[in-house]
Image 1 (tube, helix red, strand yellow):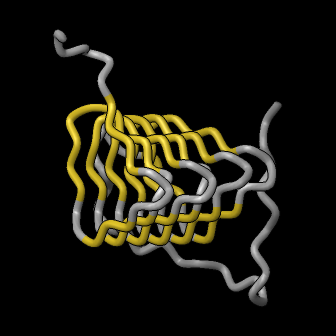
Image 2 (image 1 turned 30 degrees about the horizontal axis):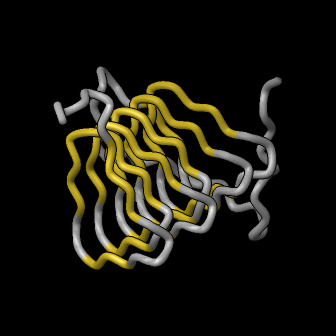
Length: 133
């Protein structure tokens, strides 16, 4: 069978991986990952947990992420719960998604260096996110 250019790898819901993952194509994660993920495209299922950074050209997140995210095209679905800073070129967030971190656009396709952005104290309550229709 010839290798398809549309190939992808799947990490099932019964799989837990401790360590970094690198994939040159699309990666679909339904299991638990403790480590960084680098891939061309990431699709995260609702039951998935990632404890580590994510770097991808495109990412569609529906589960739990504890770590920074760097993606050219990022879609955060309503079932997603993200704790960490988010760097993006294009961003879509569904109403109901939970994000605890800072958002910053990438500059020229690269993650910006850490900037001294002052967080404004809001007595522990984050403002609600709104999504454009």
